[in-house]
Image (tube, rainbow, N blue to C red; front, side):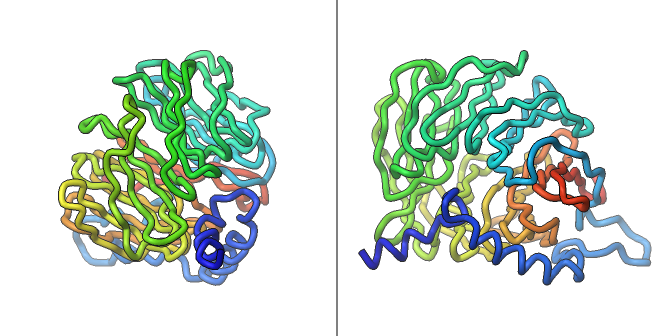
Length: 363
C-alpha cells in the first residue's frame, strides 16, 4: 500500500480530483519568475551587433479572447484541412474551435464534461474528444456537429487515430488501460489493461502500433506498444528514472519517442530500436508536447508555465530555448506550416480566457 501511495502522486496534475495542489505550487513558481522575463537558454534577447536574429525567445503575435469560464484547458489538435485549431476547454466542459490564421472563434461545442484528449482524423472528417466519466465524443469536422458518443473506460485522457485499421485508441487513465474502438469509433470496444495508470497515446504508422505511456504501481514507468488489431501488448520499454510518465510524441523520423515525466520534471528520448534513453531537465511538471516538423523542434509545456524547446535534428536532447510563457501554460500546439505556437490560457491579463499566439523571432 505504501508503494502504491507513492506512485499515486505521479499524476496528481493529470487527475481532475487531485490537480489543485500541483497547479497552486506551479503558479507560485511562475509568479516568482514572472519579473525575470524569458530565460532564453537557446536564443536570448537580440544583441546590438550585426548578425542573424535568433529564433528564440518567441515573439507574441496576439492574445485572442476565448469564450467560457476562466478554467483549465487541456489538449489541442490542428485540423489542417479546415484551417482550424481544436481546443479542449476541460473545466468549461466544452470544445472550442478557432481559426488557425488569427485565433478567431469558429464554434463552441458545449456539454462535453471534462473534455481532455483531442485527435483530428483528417481523411475521415472526424474529431475525437475524450470526456469524463467514460465517453468518446465524435464530431464532424466540416459541420462541427456532434455525431455520437461511445463508451470508453474510466477517466479517459489521451486519444489517437489509426487510419489504416480504422481504430481509435483511448487511454482509460482510471483503469490503467487502453480502449481500442473499431470502425472509426462506432464499432466494438476492446480494453487492454497495461498498468496502474495510462497517460498519452500516439499512433506509429511505420510499425502499425499504438504507443502508450504507463505508470506502474512499482517503478519503473514504461512505454508500451499495442497491436491495435490483435489488441495485445507487443513491447514494454522500462523508463528508469522517469516518475509520472505521461506526455508523449514520436520523432518525425519514427525512430524515437519523447516522453514527459511529470513528477520529477524530466524529458526522455527513447530510441525505439535499441531502447537507449537520453534524459534532460524541463519545466516543473511537464505536460503537453508538440512538434514543429518543419523545423524539427520539440516544444515541451509545463504546469509551471515554462516552455522548453529541443532541436530534434540533433542527437540526444539538445535544448535551444527555455522561457516563461505564462502561469499554468501547460498545453501547447504548433502549426508546422506557419511555425505559429498556440497557448490557451485560462486567465489572461484581464482574468478571462485567451489564446496566446506566438512565433519564432526569425523564420
